[in-house]
Image 1 (cartoon, rainbow over the protein chains, first blue to last red):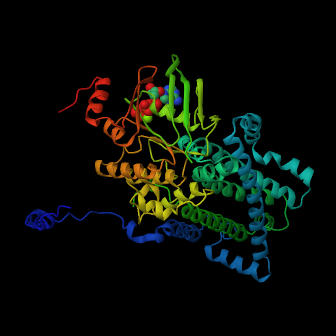
Image 2: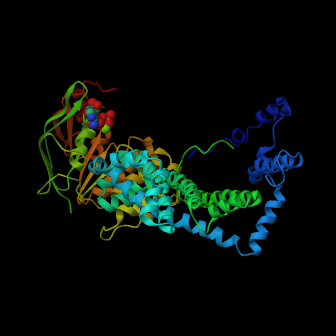
Length: 287
Length: 239
Ligand SMILES: Nc1ncnc2c1ncn2[C@@H]1O[C@H](COP(=O)(O)OP(=O)(O)OP(=O)(O)O)[C@@H](O)[C@H]1O
Ligand SMILES: [Mg+2]
């Protein structure tokens, strides 16, 4: 090993004279977004709250039509005191959890098969795409007719809503896998389920994760649709109830709760996704 | 234990946009059990194509390839391949990449031990994207070694390495194969590498390509052999 001249390593002279020439950069006018960290995400909600309060103060609508933010919290407390808040939230969360899991599981099995095998794609692909073209709410009357008005038609609808984003993203994810990695798997003796587990699923995982998150958003959408149509529990039920009793505060409360729950569950999925994708070397946006 | 590789009358025709493209034709090559054969040829002549056929990743359009007594129809678990690019699984760490293929290999070396042999101690937990090209290719070598394959198929495995590491890895390869426990097919366009490592050198040339000459290295003066081979490619020795 040849050791470097220490004078060169330290750059004697060069650095000092360079510093003498350097001028301080002129102060630039920019929003201090970088230093805010996680609080950045709260800027917009706070602005919306402020505008909301402003609209109330200016009396654009009557107080019954547009209650101030604090009234919404009071409505929550009122519901809580008569034991109606938590059960309704839990009912909706449970429906989404079951419907989404069922839809996603089916989509993963079918999506892998369709993505991996062209014969299976030929068999199932066109039909599934035709079903996807039907706006899913069109199935509601049929589900109610077949499954009654209990939880079964609601869960089916939510599962259906979750199925297609997962399925579509997974199929396209499998088809974008680098063929050379599949060859590695084959050359090293992986077949069938081994190849699926070790190569196909991890390689398609970024697309699958996108599908799962879109599917979750769809699940919440279809939950509300299902509960609006006929339910005696859940956030959709609160919405209908608020409408029937002319309680805008309860409607707004339900909307805020839906936003928080949707955001919260998506946040959990996003965290899991980030953990499982530590290996990926993709562009993550600038700081 | 090592298995002989026998390539008989093998051809491969690809379907091109303007009709069929014959890339290989009438390839005849026998590598005895434990023999180290280098396949030397210019870029684009069909070296990788030939190796893929032996690996069972592609099927010949003519002829037959056997490993031991078995005709190759699919990937053979007795083979290990080092591709021209590292092809590590990006979602597995370096050690996990090695461990995956070591499953089911009797008395397999630990990933740590084999990574030490290729000079990558301390990188066991790195993700592939954190490695340099040469480091990644050394992991790919370790991955092939850990299989203890009867047949080792190497597609220009050292091309991405610096001259220094290339010599080191060549020595390591020669060391690993000294006991003749594996048959090696090494595809390369580096004459010196072929001379240094192989028992026998075959030249692949022409369009479609065929074996145009064969040289045993034992008992030959490497300098004369080098000049002779370079002459075959129409090159003059730079003195
Ligand atoms: N799948 C394919 N379809 C059509 N042509 C192909 C295919 N694979 C290889 N070829 C052609 O076959 C020829 C040989 O390719 P190959 O990759 O075997 O070359 P090589 O000798 O390994 O070259 P290099 O030293 O640059 O790696 C090339 O002309 C290439 O265009
Ligand atoms: Mg090649």
